[in-house]
Amino acid sequence: MRNENLNRLTVKELELFDKLAQAYAANNIPILMADYATQRGGILSEFVASGGRAYIAGGSNGQQFFPNVPQFTLPYDAFNDRTIDLAKNIVTCFPQGLVQDKFATFNYAPVGDMFWARSIQERLGGRVVATSEQNFRDYFEEKANLTDILTQAGLSKHIIPSKVIRNNKPLTGLQSEFLYKSLADEQGRIVIQECGEGNTEQGGGHSTEIASTFEEFQQIVSRERPCYLKVSQFVSGSNSNLSLCVGNTVPSETMLGAVKGELLPEESRFTPAALTSLKDRAEKLGISEDNIVVNVQPGTLKVVGDAELTSSETNGVGNQLNYNFKPEIMEEIYNIGSKLGTFMALRGKVGMCGLDLIITKEGQVYINELNDRQQGPTESASLNNEAHGLPGIHREAFLLNYADLKNAEVASYLTEMGERSKEIYDASSKIPSPFYIKVCAKEDCFSTVDLAAGDYAVNRDASGEYIWDLQQDRQLEEMPSVDITETETVVRINTVSAAQGDYVPEGSQFLRINGVADSETAPFTIDENGNSVLAENWVDPIRALYQASLSQTQIVNQSQITTDPTYIFAPSGLDLAMEIAK
Image (cartoon, rainbow, N blue to C red; front, side, top):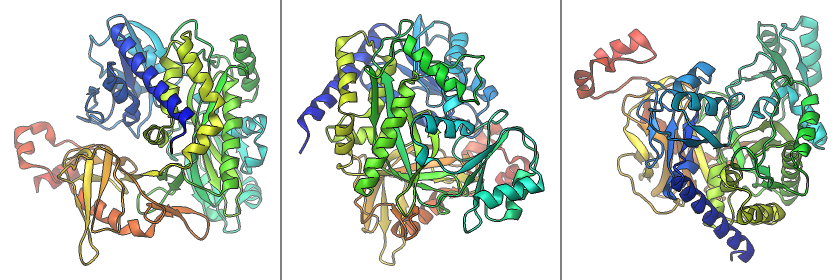
């Protein structure tokens, strides 16, 4: 039975979103997204469906993640190479003429100080009137700062024991021995992360290594590096993504949306002093506990490094949304989100952020990372909320960044969202639980199929073998209910735009599988050691999917080769050209 008050709030949220899209259209304001992770632009598809205009730049050659949002792409995949030079190339994909006077920008991954917005303005002209960009990410996602942030936010008991080496010098033998003895677990495991000044973080666990012996550890920490080093205790347990929406109801005087705090260019990104300066400036902007907004989405059950889905033991490969942990864990997760969200909102943060949690077998909740951005499962969880009469935080964040907060209707909605935060959280934990599985290339390989987003059948024959029908899109109206043990079930595949022969580098995401499953048939579970893993029922179907869609050998249509002499191009060079010639 739906909660009447929360259902009313959801209806109001959707109504305000529609009005916003139509107002942007009436004022000829397009929203432009230039990003490395363009598949995170789902809210723009909804914005266009509500009457607005949006355009995306980025993604690999010919990709279009959302049918109603034009996407301008590069001839190569930009997802795994996140450099400033590449960002500039992404922006140049936008054709002239998209902007007449005013425009807004949307981003999944902010870079520096309003980099995307300024670069688009240089490319297309016009005036930026709204954006989700904020230069907090340089500070809040910095691993060297995590202990300071959590301590000041009142979350000390959730800190993983660690040591930050605040220089770029290789560790000596004595230093290595001391750290290893201090922090390695009983099995000899220890976590090493590059961080701090000089580090270029790609995300997705790329800067994290796990050593299992002192020899492995010494080899890692004694090599040359350009940055700081963080060494942490290895914590074993189930993983969880916790998504938050934070902000305030103070209208910005220079743009649409809420007033935002910013780091000053001269402020160090690696000391706790910035946290005090941010709070002082936020108070001068009028931000206080009386007008901040904090909403917490229930934690997911996240799987990291499962060998069936990735070659990297630190790469996240899937999530079961709104997972029902034990009641005391659920309460602890909400309190963590509320405290951290309040701390960031009082420093002028506006929009999405989140935490990566590790929950031990004994029930201790640790905070592994802070992500100052929209997380992978946030949008799916928000849409699931709306499908069950509950407000979604992805749309709340959009309104915080793009709506006119001088409008009493908008301000009233945001205030009520904050007041009903715990009520929304509790209701969200009781609705059906969707999942997504992130299928990553476990080696450099090629797509063997032409595949677009859609709903596809998975068949199980009499001998128990799984066959994926990747040709026919079943086009279901609702998210499919999945039971992989049945003779036929349907899954939803998204964030994919693959042509036969496309190069898929190791570590990159090839596609995502979505659906809804009950606890007996869910793709993820917690094993006897307290770790989150791919469920046994899903191992054979996933192996069959890899066999059906990816290969180390490139397979292309002969017509492509003969009609386009430039087609013989791929990162593997001469060996690949010779393979095609065969």
